[in-house]
Amino acid sequence: MSSATLQDKSRSTSSVSANGTSSPAKGFASGFVLEFEKPIVELENKIAEMRALADSSGMKNMSVEIDRMQKKAVRLREEVFSKLTRWQKVQLARHPRRPYTLDYIERLCSNFIELHGDRAFADDRALVSGIGEFDGQSVLIIGNQKGRGTKENIQRNFGMANPEGYRKAVRHLLLAQKFKLPVITFIDTPGAYPGLGAEERGQAEAIARSLYEMARLEVPIITFVIGEGGSGGALAISVADRIFMLEYSIYSVISPEGCASILYRDAGQAPQAAEALKLTADDLLELGIIDGIIPEPAGGAHENVDEIAMRVKEKIANTLPELLAEPSQKLLEARHKKYERIGFFLES
Image (tube, rainbow, N blue to C red; front, side, top):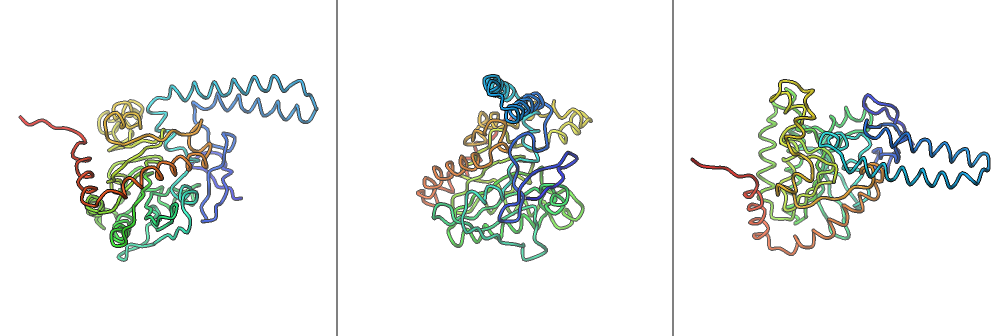
């Protein structure tokens, strides 16, 4: 076990997995709590105290009361999570205990080999890419990777890729084309890194090249938005035949804070901007941007990582054979039509 300091919050009790990355711990008690979760946390803490008292004192008659309170906690959780605002879903999508790309890879793939570097400048650790085996089928997996704790987040640049990250992705996409490997991508980034060095090294061109190559790739592509899907940094690796979102993930052209800064001249108006952006899974399914929503465990994906990984695995298992059965030309035509249908315009 290792401990790490969560961003500007209390301690984490995450564990370190075989691939050297920390996995999110279970339960609210492990540190980070959102404002709307606090009533649930308080009730669950009371239940834990009652259980401890019953165990230490041998008071068997407390079991009925504990059972009653446990049912109350379940009802309260269901009530709170059934009425989440768009801004509260944004907060859940950014939850620091939420599972990241490597957490899914660890549970979905065997024999995963991470490939490094863009063969031009550097290896961008904010974007993970490699080849693994999914149910006997070799696949290329690309995904944004955030860190757990300040030190790892700095190493991962908070999940914001530089141009070398997208050029690494393109290099591997061309490998997938050469060896006929299906592609699975995981989206979880605030956006592409907007720093001076990134702009000097051609951030916009790198994103554009990734969009171009994904649009013409003659192998199936499945994308999962697992947390934040922010701006061109997310779109760069999500030109896909099928796009699925986790229930409490978000996908938008700009962050609520960025939108509020532009429209209202006040980043504090982010909750209002989130409502206007319609960036939740429900919104995007209704608009025809995505192809499906994967329900999350009670309390969010971070409350049961194994369960959400199993749901993602089932979605891949149901979708991939269908796409593999399509001739490459039909696959490309359908992909192009999919993106032509997104949005509308009027000519005067």
